[in-house]
Each structure stands twice: as structure tokens, then as C-alpha cells.
Image (tube, rainbow, N blue to C red; front, side, top):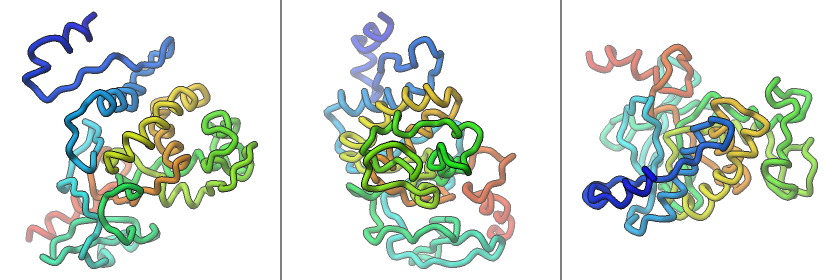
Length: 262
């Protein structure tokens, strides 16, 4: 009733807001499934989306650069002085725009977000799920069944999964292309027809086996592997948790600010 009264109120016609019903998993009290469910509801019920790319962000982060659809276009790659495991991408105006781990694959040749080309914040969750059921699986993924999430013919399956998939996702591939979290950036068409249908479909299946906070994030990364949408990972979109000091976040820029400013 509250949802219906809000959507019918005049305020919804005056502001650029979209109200959705709850997509919390029934009986589980897991509210984070509202992220894929709410975004899917918005993109399928909104007819005024003119943008070619969409970025999804979380509220518990600080953005350090404008979110742009360009991915290293016209930029040069330079090794950072402070950390040998990180590289920076510098534009033609000699301004640093991207920070990435040096061991990641190069940025896609097109260098622009478009159908089939996506980007996002590198996250420390890595490709843990890709080792599910193997001898190297972490505790939470020893008994995790990828086939139950993705189906028998999905490319997300690994070498130990039951199924008939012609492609098997390795841990290295998952670490290099699918270890992504907010900020997620993809073309509008990829969000609408590829990412969101799979993300919302996989969400309850992942949570059924992994009933923890990050279930929705793992559902996203597994969905990306299922549709083989590889993400260009960067450390420089945001910072969130200072206690980690991970190279997957751009704490190097925070630590080196006094050097740059002087």
C-alpha cells in the first residue's frame, strides 16, 4: 500500500525518483537483494533512459574521479613510484585518470563503455567462487554448487562442476575480469538485456548456498561470467574501507596527496 501511494503521489511526477516494491528475499530478511531487484524494476519500467551507459554505485564510498565512459583512451601507462604493483594511466594533459594493479590484462582496445565492454571497481572478493568445489576452495565455497546457480551449460562453471559447458571459468580468469564491485559501469543495453536478468535470477540461488552479506556481489560476478561480460577493473573509482588498505582501492592516491600537492 505504501509503495502504491508513493508512486501515485504527485511527488513522483515532480522528482526524478523511482520507487520499487521490496525485493528482499522472503523469510530470509536479506535486504541486499533489493539492489538487483530494484535496478531491474527501474530499467524495465522507465521509458526515459537516454544515456548509453549506466553506473551503479553504493552509498558507503568516496569517489575520487568523475565516472567517465572512456577507459584509458589516449592515455599512457606509467609505473607508480610508491608501489610496484600499481600502474597509472595519464591523459594528454598529464593528469592521472586511472589506477590499476599492474598484473591485470590491458584495457580493452575500444577504450569506451559500449555493448560488450564494461568496467568497474576492482574488489578484493576476487574470483573465490570460481574455485567452488575444488581442492583449493575457501571454506564457504567447498560445497558451493555452481551448476545449481548457473545451469548445466553455463560458461561460469569450473573444471569440477557437473554440466556440459563448452567454456570453464578458471580462477585466474575470474580474478582478472570478474572480481568487480560498485562502481559498476556498463552499456544500457547490457544492463537491460544481459546483466540484470541474470543477476536477479542468480541472487536467490547464491544466497541459498551462501547466506551472507556479500551474496548479491557474488551473484553479480557469477552472472558476469555466465554472460561472459568481461570487466576492465580499476582501483581508482573509489575508496571505502581504510582498514583494508588494499591495492584494489586507490589509497595510494590518498597517501601520496601531500606529495602531489607540494
